[in-house]
Amino acid sequence: MEKLELKNVYKHYVQGTVEAVKDLSLSLKSGELLAILGPSGCGKSSTLRMIAGIEDITKGEIYLDGEIINWLSAKERNIALAFETYALYPHLSLFENIAFPLRIRGRKDQEVRKEVKKIADMLEITNVLSKLPSEVSGGHQQRTSLARALIRPASLYLLDEPLSHLDTQQRTEFRVQIKRIQKTQNLTMLFVTHDQLEALALADRIAVLNLGVLQQIGTPEEIYEYPENLFVADFVGEPPMNFIKATLVREKNDYMAKLYNQKLKIPENYKDAIERFYKGDVIEIMLGIRPIYIYISEPVEGQTVSGEVYVFEDIGESGILTVQIGDALIRVELSPGYSFKLGERVNITFDLEKILIFNPTTGERIKANDSKTAK
Ligand code: ADP
Ligand code: MG
Image 1: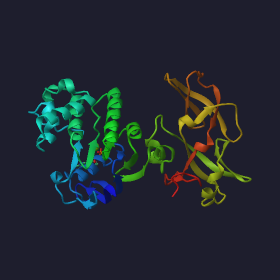
Image 2: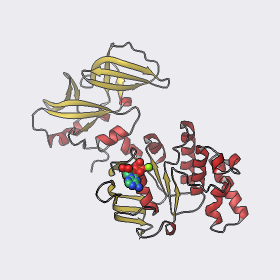
Image 3: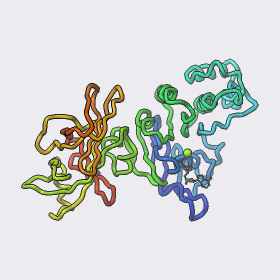
Image 4: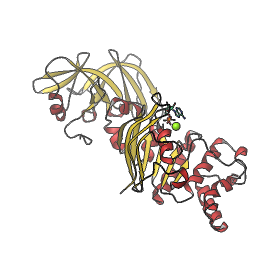
């Protein structure tokens, strides 16, 4: 049975003006960590607030453990929350803030101490537990809010950007702790973030939202390797995917992508999909390829294009080479040890297996025959 299920959920803030969430359907299995990923304002918090019961659902249904919860108050839903704004009790110490959910459930003092210590150790706030929220940093307050959410058993855990007030190193560190707690205790968790790397690292599955609309839901690998459209392809991955406009041409039995008189061979498994729309006229396509799937090599027929070095950034563990071909700038991620002169001619070779093709008008990905997410 699904733990949580959203069916065609909408959120309008002012009737007809702000449509924050549009026709959202998704479900979550018990013990799963689903990340909701998208840019600021795409409806992530609105979605979480509707599930938590602190915001009305304009239309649609939400089920928790098979029961519709639309009309239950926040208190009646067995859901633990940690939001970006910490909402700590200002007059209680951090210790008592974390202990609160256990105290109101009448747990013994000795047990409470043990549980608070355990979670505080994991989130590295043990030495500030006696302080008031106003006496500690935003990062400490945020970890306290997270500890308070994770300390009690709940049917579902909702975390809204729970690491946003921490620095990069701490985010990486506590991301690991959250994943460990979630996996060892088999918690069902919805984790909201605008940080694609955080989503890729943490989640069992990721739901990508844009402008209130679900773009794709899938495993991190599906989202990274087989983005359904240009939005997902562009939003996920760093450095970002290259998008290269090309024209589709047929040569004997092969289809080629032509860019400035250079040609890349389109893999065989795209043939069926291409023949569904290609009628022999000049047609534009958008190639998508990640910088890690392009190499420097001797020219290989149908796989290599040449251009000029636009810029080279040596960032220690890798080098990012930007190559100019006509108006196109193509990023290549290289292993250390390369150096280039500006304007130097280079051959870059594409891993054709990794090439994606998008319809430049609709933004949809054209699916090859063996594409794992082909429906
Ligand atoms: P996210 O969490 O992804 O940044 P939100 O769910 O907070 O996005 O917001 C989605 C949209 O709804 C935005 O356009 C935002 O301005 C709007 N919005 C959020 N909360 C309210 C509110 N209480 N009243 C009116 N509009 C709101
Ligand atoms: Mg938000």
